[in-house]
Length: 203
Image (cartoon, rainbow, N blue to C red; front, top):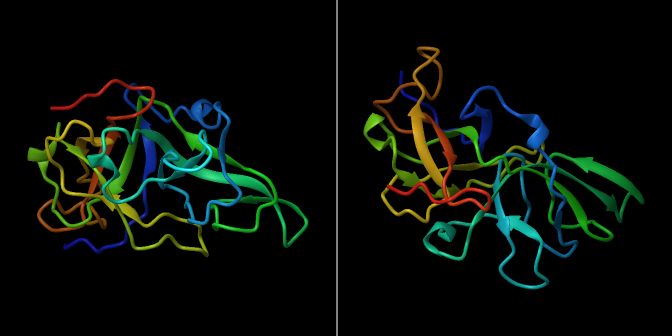
């Protein structure tokens, strides 16, 4: 059955040695600048900011993988901030791009051994791509109702500065969306490649 396009960003399925290690989530205190106006969704890839006051994270953008100085931090899993409109602390699956008084506390999985399920932007991405690296495609925009990312995985290549490495393709359960490796929009498993706590694994 042909796959249906429905990107969901990066969903952790485990680590190189087993199940997800959720103790890695949020161990490092990341922050989003209150004035950062781009929304960041649950499952988005993030990096350190390239302009303005340094030390803040922002959403990974199309083409960032082609810039040697852009290094992946991890995957965004929600945030906490003082809402200017509500006048109280708000916990959210996504950063809407406004409404914060002061910095935003961001939760990011930065475990260098984590592995993630992601949908191919086009594809299909086949067994032949295992070991290759890939950037992301940022779009369509994430869902403001569910907070879920709209990122997907761009076509794999051999550029070793790209943020992700293909480690497997998904074929189970048979018939489920994303498991047909002969048609576009199939699901694959990736690991971090060019990430701040991990040496390049380039091919």
